[in-house]
Image (cartoon, rainbow, N blue to C red; front, side, top):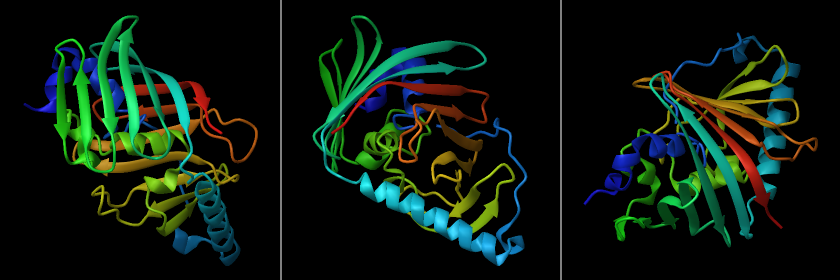
Length: 259
């Protein structure tokens, strides 16, 4: 039996979760978001190139400080809409370190859709309504196994929500462009693990991710990060996902507890 059967009756809810992030948010094969013209790296001045490299290093340092195996707990609300319908689900995730990660997906009070556990080697989704568990030994494509074109696993989603961006996105860039309103857009090195090529990550002048995007066969996938708290090392409280099929998802963090 395939794990996608868990959500077959609730395809809209499952699709919204897996579009988070990614992940939690989720995701994202579209070109709905507007794109600001950027100055290519070969046109940057030496001082701008130096500033871009320094900002990237600041971003790496912040992410490295978050790479600790510490307990965490979070809850979030996810609103997902298509031209035909809209849905709202609640997700709760927790763990004692980076792996394993537990996540419950709920469609409302008393309506649990799935209980999920993922470690470095396997992904298990339990359907409480039918008292059945589904196991996938390839945890890196767990969300794909749920029938959705989403290049994240549950662990990836947890890393994004915890601000460990370099655990998901490549830590090196191959080109950089100036963003007129401030910050730089970095074309990231290819990522063989996820099968990504030419993805782009935009940082503001505090080294905070503002947007990640990548082109896919169905269009352009975009994740926008915002609602940061005041400190430079704060985490985003809102993740917005837009896809080429005119679908969108908004993940809002309700509670994030960490040491």
